[in-house]
Image 1 (cartoon, helix red, strand yellow):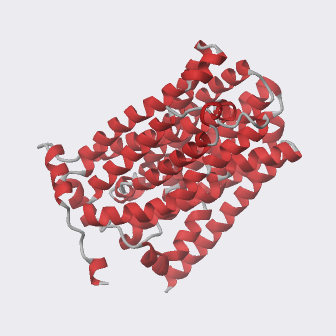
Image 2 (tube, helix red, strand yellow):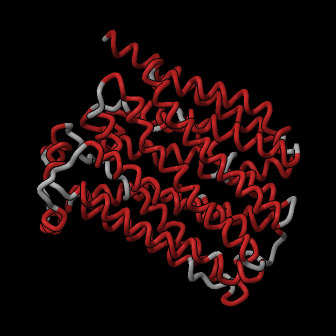
Image 3 (cartoon, helix red, strand yellow):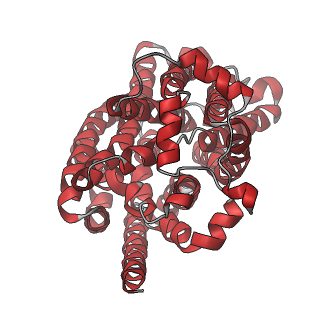
Length: 446
């Protein structure tokens, strides 16, 4: 017990990293915010590069022995492996953090993330090596999931804790901007290669460039974040706020209720996340041609810009009605959208454009506060590990199988099924937030 409460000391590797990145300027709040956005953008770029390739590339390259629908669903099955691996990654990299320090952990994680993504760029086809292609892709996807857990640096929690009381919602939304930025980078690159290359050339080598780019982007993100994480000032801020890694078993014993609620509270958000990004692209590709896929990618680029506006607006709104109320309001909007979504997506070019634009606007409002609304309930001692594990579990429950589930439901029972899927997520979020609000009131009266 005493060892768990002790402040972890930096290793020699951590001290070397600090000397390498030290300067005389110190760490300013704006640098923390910039580091958060850069880090999240690189992570979501990797995430979306794989997701888009699951629709445009892997069914033909890795699963050519089945029909196109089955191939996309198999690719979405491998997509889920990263989310299954993330909680295990939190345990593994939490131990590295405690023993060697945040800088060492972050370096290993980001090189694993970029390396796993870059290896996919050299993936041989099923026609060339048979089932080895499937196993190699699965291994890389697991590597991405482990690395995403290790890339947790605590900067988002630190940013929120150091924010003025009346601007907590605004600061909580800053890390979430990485999602639309990463999506725009990934979809923009794929749109460019789909537009400029012949289909055979795109499937042969064009799709590989976004994966090569992912490694370079991760290296840039690594140094941008190490510039902050490896400084003495940053470590002092962490110690001041008592943001230290703890054992997962201790966290679950002490605040397991917060972890459970935090895993389910963003369910509507993460269901919506994939139903306006990955799933509609798969639906359009399966029921159209390459030109329709290209047009839809362009529509989604514009939708992501709308999503940025929604995230910014979420911070302003949350500071006036609280983050929990903002998330509940967003769940109601998602529930309302679930009634329109099937008709819009089946409404041709105009309906699909409306689906994407409205969907991204609501997603931005919801996603902007999805992380901070519940993680704020952790005590200081458990917040660092609690926020990381809660994020892993919420992505696993809400997002990991969402593309597979949505495509499977829509293929079996038609597009109205995705409306029910969204509505169920909205109900789960409202129920989790209600339980959370009741628990907090009881704790306040104790």
